[in-house]
Every structure is written in structure tokens, then in C-alpha cells.
Length: 135
Image (tube, rainbow, N blue to C red; front, side, top):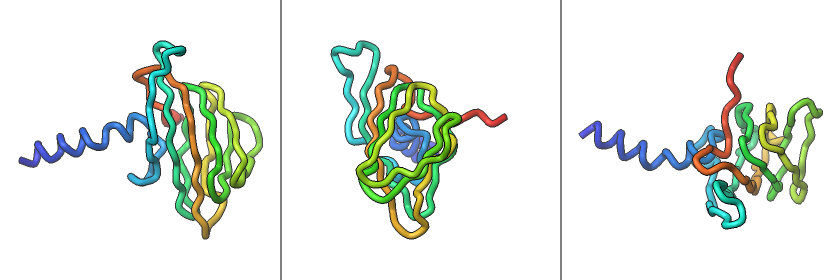
């Protein structure tokens, strides 16, 4: 019986970990839609939201596909590749080319939540986010 529960839990959680290895909390990432665009064979487009509690951060990661992020609420501090840290406020956005190292991604506030809308175009079968290998 225990084996059945573990299998069921694995099946239920697998789409979240495959789509976004970014999440510390189960409700941090919400996939809004996934589509296979007819004009991009072998790719999938993924739209999702990432919600950060006050002071919450994501581990360092990269995206195998292109990513566009838009801050819906609050402010998010981000560091991409060798660029300096930048804090994006509600209404601001950025682009990440495939393979961009995203070493910092965190809520800029210790008292207010933050929320991102993210769109990614990634090869079918690949996750939207991959954790960085530890040295």
C-alpha cells in the first residue's frame, strides 16, 4: 500500500519538477499552459507564474530554452551571467537567452510578496529550468 502512495505522489508531482526545478515550495510555481506551436516543430511553449513569499529565493539555475519574465507584483532581484544584480519592479521585464546562468533570483522585499509571469520556448522533453551543477 505504501508503494502505491509513493507512486501516486510521484505521478502527481512529476509535472511540476519537470517543468520548473526552481520551486522551493509546492505552490511557488503554477503552470498556466503548455502548447506545441505548429511553427516551431520539436519545441513547446510554457507559460507559468512564479510566486515568491517575502524574502524567498530560488536556487541558482539556467534555462535550456529562451525565457521572458514579467514582474506582475512586488519586486524581484535577478543576476544573469556576468551582469550586475538588478531589481525589477512590477511592470518591468527581462529576457534570458538559452543557457543563461541565473545565479540570483529572489524577492527583493522581506515583507511583501512578489510574482512573475514567465514564458519559455524549450525543446520538447526538456525542463524549463535546470539547477546549476555544484562545483
